[in-house]
Amino acid sequence: MRKGTKTAALVLAMSMAVSMLTACGSGADNAAETVGTETVDTDATDAGAASGAVVTKTEGVLTFGTNAEFPPFEFIASSGVIDQYDGIDIAIAKQIAEENGMKAAIENMEFDSLLIALENGQIDAAIAGMTVTEKRKESADFSIPYYTATQVMIVKEDSDIAAAADMADRKICVVQGYTGEICVQDLGYPYEAFKKGTEAIMELVNGKCDVVVIDSATAQKYVNDNEGLKIVEDASAFESEEYAIAVKKGNTELLDMLNKVIEAKLADGTISELGAQYTEAVTAE
Ligand code: GLN
Image 1 (cartoon, rainbow, N blue to C red):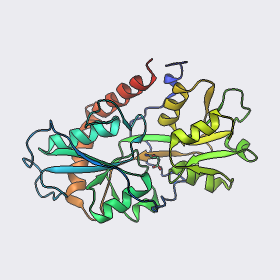
Image 2 (image 1 turned 135 degrees about the vertical axis):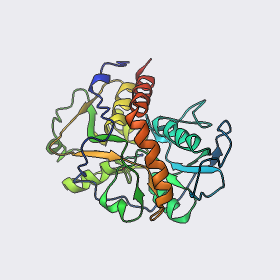
Image 3 (image 1 turned 90 degrees about the vertical axis):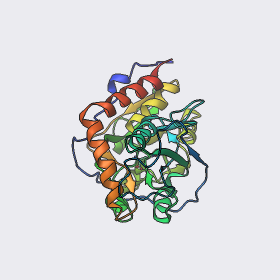
Image 4 (image 1 turned 90 degrees about the horizontal axis):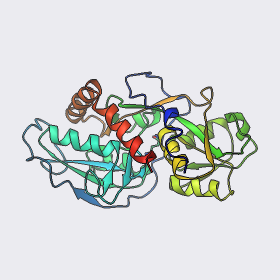
């Protein structure tokens, strides 16, 4: 495998950068059903100490919803940061809970279910490499952003696709509900949507599709893990996107709590270190 060779190309621009909202980020489709389980982080500190006015689903526990199909931000590992869940977002979630004297719990579900789960009170916050979009802002409030990404195209190494416009007459694969799907819709091209990034990648690897449009850091992970693929960027077609944590609309107490920790972790370099650490972890042999 060509591990690490493209690591330099991975843009780990840890937020506070451009606050430009993507033109193709017009919103998520909250349709799918919730799947998955809840787990509670057992080695967190005692609950409740500094949670202040924040009211959570379970007292002393901060329940984060995620979709653990999005490495390096969230994925399932044999031994994760919170039970089997690992990744940049999971580490951030754990730190936010612990710094507020709470335990962190993860509920793993489909990406499209996260904002519904927030509205229903099934989870306190959604941390899922979730891009802030105008559409999503209609149904949730977002923390300050903690990561800047962009959509990219993954193609076979010998592909002649060099720009987004080259996708016009090709078979395009995306993941359902991701901003990549919205971008391709905005470009006006037909596409096929899969439930998981790995499924879209398998289509590409097996020659059943020509290009997968997905977030940059996750694309890098797939390219590292699968022989014969490369990333093609097109900054004129795909603007930068910002990841933030979502809370139920109006939950300003929780939002303030999240923002304080994110602000501190951006300022002291913790989030950028996590980015480097998990990027290395996914690119190392
Ligand atoms: N950033 C993309 C989005 O918000 C993908 C997120 C994810 O799959 N976890 O749609």
